[in-house]
Length: 376
Ligand SMILES: *Cc1c(COP(=O)(O)O)cnc(C)c1O
Image 1 (cartoon, rainbow, N blue to C red):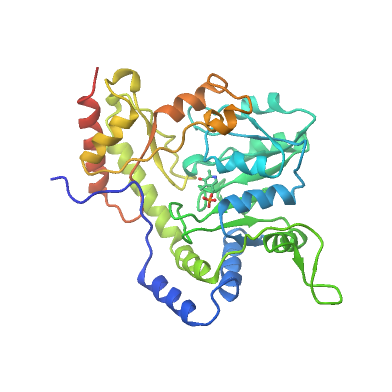
Image 2 (cartoon, rainbow, N blue to C red):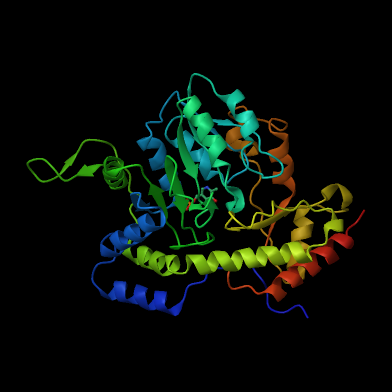
């Protein structure tokens, strides 16, 4: 029994949230307003009381974080090549230069043992990425950042709801960027948030997210810096409030499904499994690497055969430095072997809160069938 098609992810939007959005739409105020302020207050509560400002994407949160940290032309920013391309694009967007450091093949996150060797006198910031929601070791990361006087803009786009040493990601650290894209653990359809150190930075974020406008001067308004159009709508913020209320439940369900994967996934297939972290990861994705050297077909054919079994599989992500835009800037194959090998063989299997244990079992059986049917 194949059953209904199982996508690799699907947002869970409840009827209370849908009714709340309808209320906002009828209220006469649909862009940034009371829902945005309420969402920011709730996010701040989640982040240990630190100021949080919402934005219209996670990319915007990262770019604003770089601007607030003072990163600009001639600066180098160290990040991972195994991430969504937004992480490196924002570095280019502020005129700085990305410097990639290879990933640790076990965690698939920045290899902190290699990080210090990449620091130069031009390095001003690090953007660590919590791939699939597995937190980068914050203790080691911040020890390095402090030793070299570097700013940190955490790309926590995938790790909202994860924690480090018992505290939520966002409750500690320098600047922390979240994404609320449709595929993320908490969504506003499109959206993001930046966690800041203090009220001065929060006011800067408010100014930069709306054209650089400040409420001051003789006309009650002035513009003294070039800002963006990065504000979130009240319609989106209301979705976020409905999602945030269920964060603990969503995360618990994801962890239970991830545990089921470890119980049911056949280790003899030769796939590379994620780190089994049930205390800290939010299990944004369940990703395995395929044993391509043992298969008669490539990743594309694996995905097509899984689809024929009624199961959606994603690719997150090919290594950033091998995209054409980055190749023309000088990067090439061989620069970061672990990121390249993982980026070429990784697949994202279905994991979202509305799934049940039997869905995981179905995925595991299909993976076994497809791989066993393709052994060279
Ligand atoms: C989703 C994501 C982003 C960007 O978030 P958007 O809301 O899509 O702009 C950045 N980095 C990582 C690692 C992501 O997964």
